[in-house]
Length: 193
Image (cartoon, rainbow, N blue to C red; front, side, top):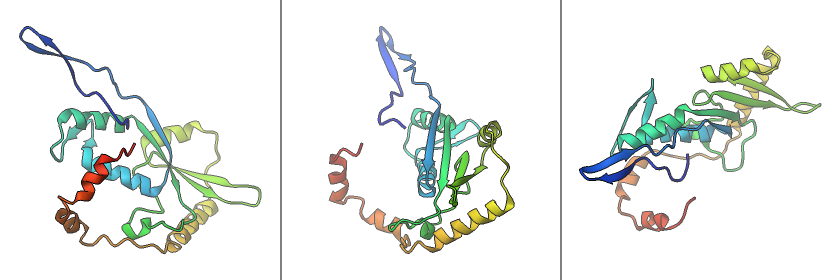
């Protein structure tokens, strides 16, 4: 999503204002290489910015319908390719919060690397109609059962290798108590883009 987006423009008239279409549109977008934790974060953003289903939008808070509609249009035009982790990093904790290493939803295509002596091969799985359409257009061989089982084993081993645990019990209450914390102001003063 862009850092800035014009959601409304107007022109002063003799009787008030006239709306002008900002002409942003919703460009097609491909996000390639999102990990399970990224995909889970995107699902969280969906709950923050608005729920998008069946072309209808609904706000879950003090957000304008224009913002929600813009977000939903951008999400509908996004094609997401996820990459499942087969090796845990030192700071990975996604398994402890139920967001990985396996990607089960939120992507159009999911890629799992299968290391081999002659170089890696890749297992592709579609999780949406758009993903199935793209997969159908690729000249790839159908997945073999032993590759599917190997990918499952690699994902289980990756999850088992995650030693970091993030305890989120009571996090909502903790954040509620910190509503007026000066850290929020300090963070807001920094440019995060």
